[in-house]
Length: 193
View 1 (tube, helix red, strand yellow):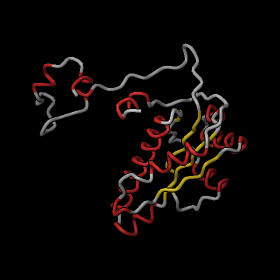
View 2 (cartoon, one colour):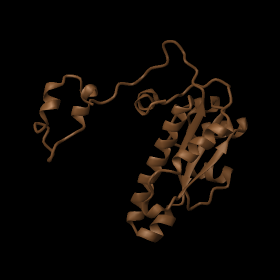
View 3 (cartoon, helix red, strand yellow):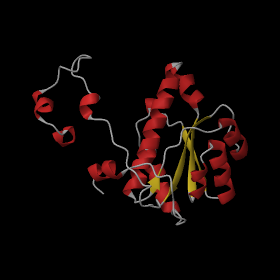
View 4 (cartoon, helix red, strand yellow):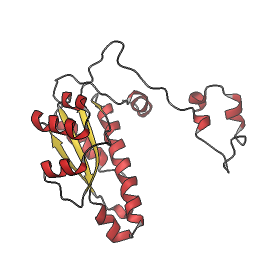
């Protein structure tokens, strides 16, 4: 898939068929994620791939989002924040968050490229997940990523509108009146490129 098509197609899926995701596909997504930029080239991310239906149901309960139980696979993305903090001090915590976001987003894009649906879940009971899956206490759970093939339901599958570019961007200083002629002339900011 072309890059722009992947960006356009990626969405958060919250309903899945029971069709399994292949190990080849999830390994391709992790491979893409490990190619992200990392501070000092220090990759601090780790993943647990969960396919056991009972374990997936437990994750759904730990997140208080029962739709997760429909997914045939869930990726637990977690990080060793201390690895970067030991190298960079307090800034290491910031780098850790930035890197985790880049890694997770890259995984979502690669899954989309492969025709696989996913969702980035950021609310859950960290302690319960660490306890059930044997994750060390000082590691940070960055996301749960339910993975599968989206079940489209007429009237329920909605694509949320995205914020306009003009509401997000400033030129030189924080002053919305300063913008290039191209943005003034174009009514559809999506077609700027």
